[in-house]
Image (cartoon, rainbow, N blue to C red):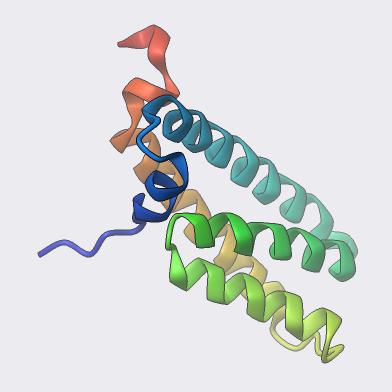
Length: 122
């Protein structure tokens, strides 16, 4: 049995049967997470950890809507390490993992929802 990377249950519950809303939220999710990854990658060389923590906070919320627990947990860990504990040990590696795993998720979602994310081509 294949492990699901995400679950649309929470989003569908919020949508109350509105499939157009679910589709729009999926598009927004992919766009926002893609931008988040790009921003984190651009900030890492300058060690802009506070801004990265703020982005990780936003990402955690996005991941929660789709029950992506591993990435939500990692995002929260990054945020807390930086903002609460002022602990930067391993942060570069954690943010790399967050970005790398998020890219894999986005690639999978684009494949799964091609008809929604790329409607012109279907």
